[in-house]
Length: 122
Image 1 (cartoon, rainbow, N blue to C red):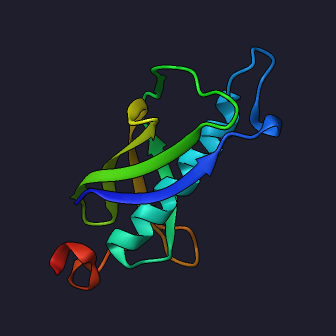
Image 2 (image 1 turned 30 degrees about the vertical axis):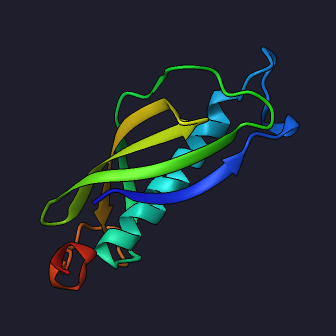
């Protein structure tokens, strides 16, 4: 289920010492976009980041570039959702990774996701 999640603009405050987007800022945006996608698909708000797989920056992001974040290929588990997350800049993929989010209860223990309420059941 391919879904555009959000967009960000690369501002001067996001630039590192080499004149390109600071990688840490990109990771922050990735985690936020991934959380939005996971909550949208599962219709569950009790999710935490479990894993961001290898993250390869395919080309630099410059000042004023607009980054578009997409989620795709959701794979449900009993307590988790794994999916692909990628970022496009000027219609070019600049990053792709795989994410896993886990549903937790008030004590931080894994809990079952009710997939009947999810967007995957629609």
